[in-house]
Length: 448
Image (cartoon, rainbow, N blue to C red; front, side):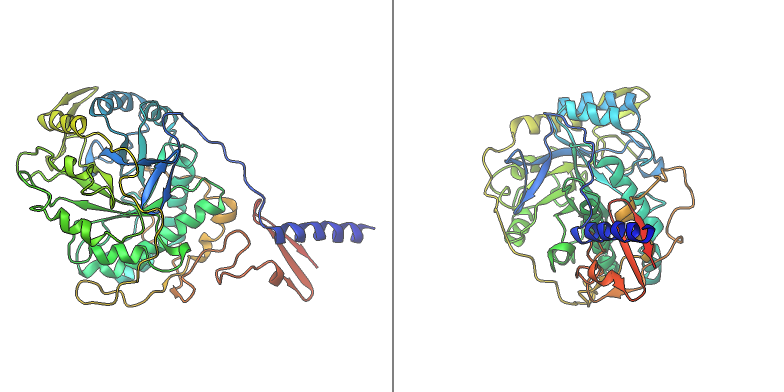
């Protein structure tokens, strides 16, 4: 009788495994002012209305004094008041403490109709582009645990607009070898979001202002099968230096260059400060000259730091608005968000992967690094405890790295699918032993 009971239980478990993981109920933090944003064709949409990114980059203290600006409710409230004056709808944050509570600031942002564009890396947890051996070593399970834990922390907020998988990893011709690892992280993040039953939060890359291989990187992030392509492509652009024009800056050529691109494109940083800034590019960015291809952008940057791009000067709990703040505020006011779809394309096709072309583009394979073996468990069990910013050890020389490039693009096994893309439940039954994996609960039952 005991054996029969066991077999009946096993039968039920096998049925569950074949059916795939049960949906995981996710708590969400919603606000009528910030409905979830989705991707359709080459544009973003909120409640079926075209969404244009219109914001600032926000990291008070800069890279010299890393702190999470949206974990401090008081400083957040101070700055949200300024955001509202600017009339923006998005802020980009480069580094957060993924172990902190962000409810207060995310609510304050949502109440003001403001979304978050979030980088998932930190100085301690990131890809190391020093050379090929270093980047291969840094793409490991400890790194991905940090990335996935950041997703876990922010996926619940409907005003989490998007995640950047990386920022400016390729910053010259020589570092283009790093592209497959950037694409692998993007692939892994998208697969993790799907496996954990989160809403479909867009994931993409923020590229450096490098003319020699920016187009190749855009094509690369949009080529291949759907499970390895990005949801958007962003780049930092400082080529419009006032006084300038749409044609003088070369922005007209970039619009033409990306006219057939099938993903949303936006500027993750802009605002050249070589001369006095009048932000004349705002008028072009939100006009029909560009809206069929671009979905807005983010001005660099909110707070005054050593590089002198700031819109405000922060001193303790007080904020002083600088001349650039007033200028940008006026430009936003005079150039409202366009109505209609702005000429966006509702659909499109994947790009062709760019060919090897030394010295600008030194990627000579369409294969991607396989998911590090120990990272596979995160897709069924979650990332676990977030490391936060207090850990000094970091990930670049930790954990278990990828075993190398995979002919099947190294797609993580999710929803009962193996990395080969074939359903694995049937193959789990073997002579003398059956292993049934309950993906929704992370439980393994062994039957002899």
